[in-house]
Length: 254
Image 1 (tube, rainbow, N blue to C red):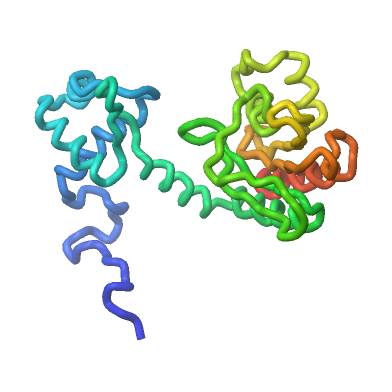
Image 2 (image 1 turned 90 degrees about the vertical axis):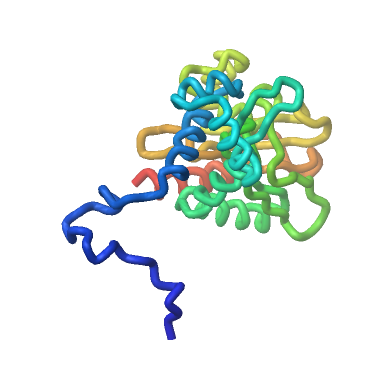
């Protein structure tokens, strides 16, 4: 039996059948105004002051402030207590992760990460370039032995971490924080290797997952203790990781 609430509402009976949804169907103006204000804030690329944001939206400061309060209560907007400026809130990250979870690259990479963690006995995770930087969003533990713990949401810098170096190597324009010679080497090998540079005694290998245009979508990373994970770009772990990344790239890239 299908419940009424489970059936998505169709267009009003008076709406033309040929009209693309939502077309000219009346909506809720206050919602659209609030979303437009949020779009301006999200697209700014940096925290904004109330006056600047209100001016861009063509609103009075008091009206823009009330919208920001409502958006902040829902988690879409945050305010810096020191500067008073507004930025995007944690709900944006949750929405982005929810959207990514519905995309094939993340699902396929997660499956490869689980398989690698089990077969190699090392922690394997998927990372994307999120709002706060390069972020681990799916972490798979081997379930046996002693493995390195990585928290979902952990951030990685572009210089000392293998994961960050992958993003820096495929960044366009090139990241200045990564030496040109190292960037060329990572792109040529299709792999970044760190031997205890990010955390002493911990090695990491990371590979890119690319789309059909060669743009970086995400990174697959293996991390483990130096005693068990070799920092060898041609070793068995590196070969298995590289093959996994290539499989995902081939699938999503067509």
